[in-house]
Image 1 (cartoon, rainbow, N blue to C red):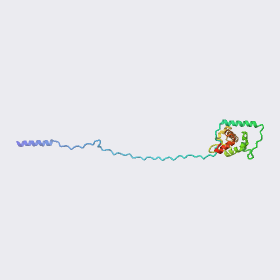
Image 2: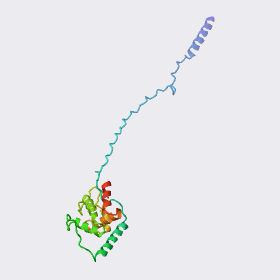
Image 3: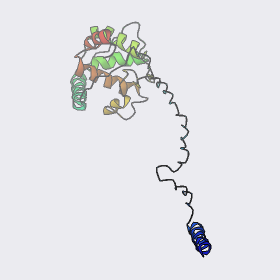
Image 4: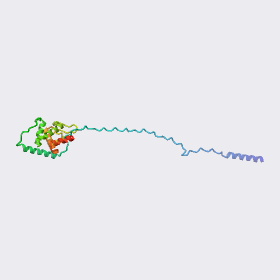
Length: 208
């Protein structure tokens, strides 16, 4: 009987050993967010920066110096008309006792110079002023009524700047030497008093 009791105890002990669960191996802990592997960081490739080439400076246009720019001063139209009116009065007053005009020996009566000399006297300008008028317009245009300065646009015998100012005398200012000379003499009288004043101004600054 003692043996049976011992057998029962042994069986109970073995059953407990079988029923007792074995210690389970610790499960692998899931990685935390901080431990989670991070995706490789992609460094954006640096695109080449376009290098701006400095623009070449724009060349400036240099105009050739114009030695003579003609009758460039601004004279009111009313003053020119006044001088023309005075000329008409002098012509009317002298018609009755007019004496033949004696031109300088080196002046062709049929030329623009001859016309210029006669018109100068009609303006009441003394004959001794002719040397200044002749030199002035000889230098400006060579007494050519079609002369035009390609740089400034000055036109005609007196080199009016612009030429359209001579329309105060007549609309044919482009082709008529008398229109041009008449305007030029009125301009000189209004601006300088006489051809000598215009010549001296031209000598100093290059225009009159």
